[in-house]
Amino acid sequence: MEERELNEKPILVTGGAGYIGSHACKALSLAGYEPVSYDNLSRGHAHAVKWGPLIQGDILNKDTLNRAFERHRPGAVLHFAALAYVGESVEEPISYYRNNFCGALNLSEAMRNHHCNRIVFSSTCAVYGLSNRQMITEDHALAPINPYGQSKFMVERLLQDCDRAYGIRSVSLRYFNAAGADPDGDLGEEHEPETHIVPLALQVAAGVEDELEIYGTDYSTPDGTAIRDYIHVMDLADAHVAALNYLEGGGATLALNLGVGRGFSVREIIDSAERVTGRKIKVRETTRRPGDPPFLVGNPARARSVLQWQPRYQDLDEIIRTAWERLCKSANISTETNEACMEAEPSDERN
Ligand SMILES: NC(=O)c1ccc[n+]([C@@H]2O[C@H](COP(=O)([O-])OP(=O)(O)OC[C@H]3O[C@@H](n4cnc5c(N)ncnc54)[C@H](O)[C@@H]3O)[C@@H](O)[C@H]2O)c1
Image 1 (tube, protein in one colour):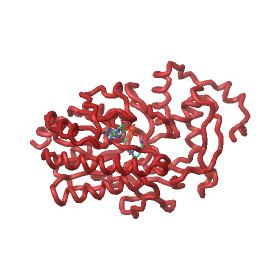
Image 2 (cartoon, rainbow, N blue to C red):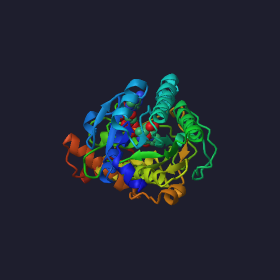
Image 3 (tube, rainbow, N blue to C red):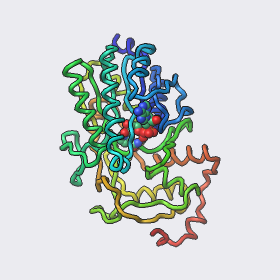
Image 4 (cartoon, protein in one colour):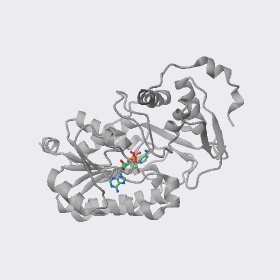
């Protein structure tokens, strides 16, 4: 019964015009929900909102937010809207705390005012800070080393308090690195500026950019480059639908890792992108970025058991292939590989 009730109500998706939010809207729509995107389009794209209405609004604007709740009466919220660049957060901490924390504060207040009591929050592995080389479980110490991770950690705490005080239940999904694109080609990753390794590597392969910068080759990892856990964006999107179902079923507030549970170094990502595209990717080695830990790989066991969910994309090349096909489609590039070009380049070309 509960499930039908929520299915009949729209889901407010803050950041629904962004990369992960837009993919989640597609997953919601396929699951029978009506996503209502709420986005200020500072970093997202109106053309990515295809499965429901778009309200152009800012989570920092309480009036617009309250009007959205009044008009659409959402049964739950998926909260993606945030500034999400680690390096930028080190340079602009005030913007990050304001946007990410004050925005979530406004959203929680609007939910309390409008009796909306379920929220799925986009948290991040950046809440863990430094880890040893073990897979990180949710019980790992929360000690963010950059303002971005800190702002997300503060929102998790806020949501726990909102449950105790107002009965707003939440699932904080701590994503590891999102990658890939909708395999149907409807959506992709279009950040401006782009800072994520997979689209950057593919842009170099496509000839859109000249070279790929590797930030740090002196980490204490086998090949010296940073190791991350890459999860396909459609798997993330599906996990949001599963988290909504969990809350509908009366599930308690909790935080869950969303990763695949295995790490790849920057160099392994480049190798995979070269295999997928059949093109050589020219790189330039540079210094570490502030706030970047060497190793972040999540243990996804709890999400698998609590949400009855598991990532469909386990293979790195397959994840990267979806992003490459989408890039080729949007930039009108042939996906034909170029073996001759790969063989002609000397293998020590990368520097
Ligand atoms: N991409 C990743 O690998 C990753 C990893 C961990 C966590 N996350 C989190 O997932 C969420 C989505 O990430 P993404 O990669 O899709 O980012 P994105 O930048 O593509 O999407 C964020 C969206 O939020 C909107 N937005 C930002 N501030 C807003 C505001 N004040 N009011 C209204 N809209 C606002 C932007 O316009 C954008 O459309 C973010 O919260 C991010 O912190 C992302």
